[in-house]
Image (cartoon, rainbow, N blue to C red; front, side, top):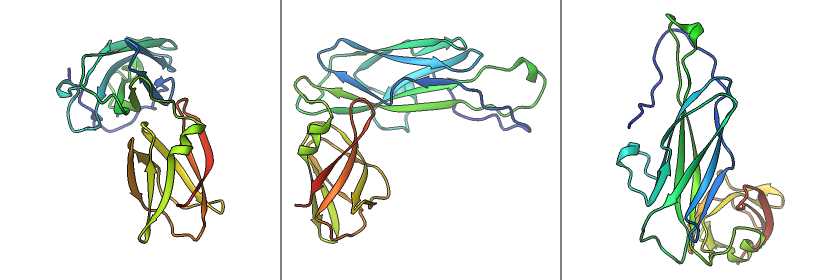
Length: 227
């Protein structure tokens, strides 16, 4: 089923309702588990129709054409107001790497209910989409925590910088600071076992404070020396 993500372009507007939220900012899928559960909550007073799907980073494809090694149920659900809904994600036979994490995304589309008070009126109605990261973690790969900083290093690369990620995890770097001044303009997503050239404001510091997001969505920081 394909939901068209458009607003009805009509004259007046209705307030955006408090709708579906996902508990958590990321999903970790350990390879040894047969399935994981994701909790949704409808914070609005009316029911919402929810469509959920997983993508591999390509947002150009409609849900029915995306091929990922997961089965998600239910793909469509009606969630009553002030109540919850669990989504079950089950891995399928796959050829994903067993020495590093693979990155996917969970999408949750919240289609707001019709308001009886607006019957016969022109309204502007929006479908709201939430999208969070889903990390498939092979057996034996460590969690993202304080120890992860031991596997991150920073080097100068000509006039720029390079961050080396020797961890088998995807790492989100939110801040890089020198002398307590933030020197990156945006968050940096580091692929496992790789290096990335990054745009950082030039500085003569030899030690930097880096902030990353751990498995639980917490922001943790530690000093990283320039090599």
